[in-house]
Length: 110
Length: 113
Picture 1 (cartoon, rainbow over the protein chains, first blue to last red):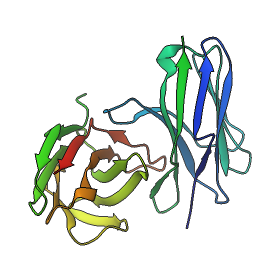
Picture 2: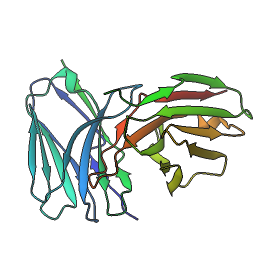
Picture 3: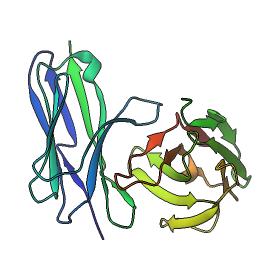
Picture 4: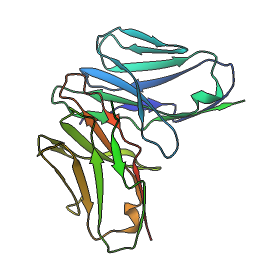
């Protein structure tokens, strides 16, 4: 069974600080997505990474896919209150099944 | 391009009743997946439909069922509701692609009393 483990589960930091959250698995994924979800809403797709070692930047967010395509990280620079939310990673396998991690709940204090 | 539309947004039902939720995917997307989200369990996969056929199924009891119509719109049904079925039900649509990106609707908040 493929699993995605996200860490930390909860993170509360001050505005302006940097942070990194992780998404790890023992399985190889053909692609990996990161989503952000706000309370009472559906997850919103942030990025997709498909190549081992790939790095993508979205303003202050940097996403990296591990060389072996088993793990990923999300780094936020100078966090802002608008970054608050639940960050989910999801991996796609060759059968086109999508596996979701349980998420990291991030709270940025103003 | 219109996004994924789920109706209704909120529902309150009594234990033992049944409920039907609706999802209209992004135009051109043929895959529709359903998820249950609760604070304790996170996002749990219910089932996926592709071209009117159930392609994948999660570990939920038979009370949870779904279907997809020829226009790719999907419905999910839960019969004999239990208190534990209270959750946010999310629908996601995907194009048939290698990247398996999912685009979610806003969800239906179901409360069973």
